[in-house]
Amino acid sequence: MMRRFRFLDLLTIGFVVVLLISNLVGPKICQFGPLRPSAAEFLFPLTYICSDVFTEVYGYGASRRAIWLGFLAMGLLAAMGQVAVALPPAPEWKGQEAFATVFGFVPRFGVASLVAYWAGEFTNSYTLARLKLITRGRWLWTRTVGSTVTGQAVDTAIVILVAFAGTQPPAMLVRMVLSSYLIKVAVEVVATPVTYLVVGWLKRVEAVDTFDDRTNFNPFAWQGESA
Image (cartoon, rainbow, N blue to C red; front, side, top):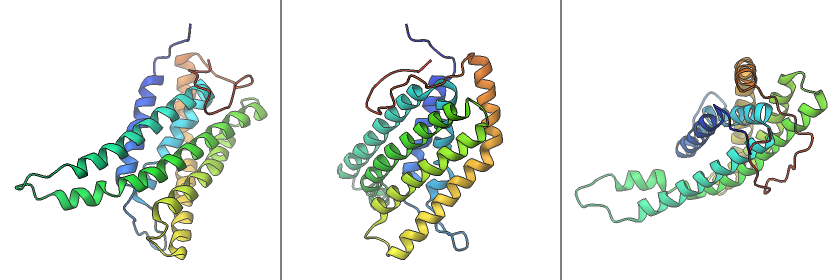
């Protein structure tokens, strides 16, 4: 019988909530000096930190489960956003244009996020699981930062190019990719001490420290927790 954990479901719910909010605020482009990040870049990196915790503590199987649940939730958000925009507004309601501006962009940004999220999260989780085997469980920072460097490179390039291609000049797209990537990696580096604390605490209270030495890393192999 599959083992049940005290905090895995709660972490998974938080992961999905952050993911959905990131998609809603993502279309806004911000300005910080020469940087042009999306508003999502200040929240979305938390999903990578969660993914690191899933993989480090519970194993690749638990991370794969959370990634797919997030993927399905994002797909539902994009679909329902379009349905809500298409429904006829009441004559006395004056918010249709603003509503359509926000949710009308969700399908394209949703597709970009779905593809980028799927590829980036699995790259992140796979890298961390492999690095844990290579380092024999030592030097957690090499895994959290190393997996973010690879995963966020894949995620950022895909989401920016798919979501904004044709709406921004090529130079701006490059600027956005670099800005977003640097912010995401910086957030991971800054959050490393917190990640250490959370991982250490969860390993103690859950009494688990999973090594994926016999794990099937196929992202389509639906399995539960590795432990």
